[in-house]
Image (cartoon, rainbow, N blue to C red; front, side):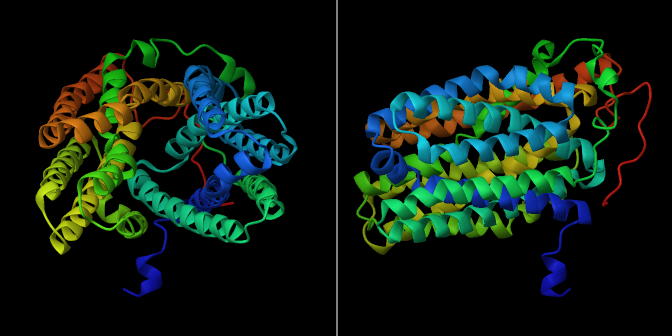
Length: 430
């Protein structure tokens, strides 16, 4: 097998969706890299105001998640996704004209609601809807790789902008991001319609019979426990870096190497981790592997408190590698849960409900994990490992409960959004 074949997308449609992932991450990564300088030096906000605005915007997106998910089902996931991308482009284009905290807060809220709440639900619903069931996980893994490539390129571009040390150059970053998102919105409109998009406006407006996701305890618990497992990102981005600086003798420059390793692994290994994950049973196996990696990372990292020199460097790096392994296997499992445990008639609504419960599962972790690791030391790391192990154990019966819920309602998760009147097959390419 040649190098080109090895890195080719699973299908032409997966390749096109991966371009969307790359474009999104390119724009987002470029802006996020320079956002702190932009908000403080160009807009003139204090660090406290920036943090407060992001917190309020995050709360707004959390509140809007479920209604935005229902809106996705009403207007169709492809159209909702395109509207979200175009809306984000317009918001980024307005950023250079913001001159007050009030304006910043309003723009941050709108950006999070149309980007995070509406766009997240629409993208998830569309990809599950349009991809054939046998290649959903593999395609999502390929898209995840493309996403990380985009964030890497975006970070490089943002870093180049920062290197000029000029507010005029930084002011151009939102314009660049707006242009990328506008291109992305146009490209989304050229994607094939998913089965839900093929329904008429009247059909989408009809009330779907039966209970929704908020009355599906298995789904809500599954996504809650999955949210707890996603606290591996807290270890990756917050706790391990703080531990390295405060509790070990490792040089701070090692942080750059750690994040570089994570990026490389998340570009080249998602499809390997997703291999064989095709249903709930194999997804639960991936959850067990992910949890083992998480626990091993905790055990390795706590040991670095008493190591010296190169031993510390090697162990901190290994702890970061293993928590990245937890991320990769959890990603594969999550994509399978989305495909196997949703009512296909309510995919947007299910995505919105998942954002609610998933946020509740992870929002507490930065404060709790930092306190446990930095104040309790080894005992704190063991408590962190225990919390995640308990969540993984709880996820198993929760996923089976969600399966039974769909079976009791007579719902085939692999069916079309309109089970009574199947829609025509979705073409792979235009």
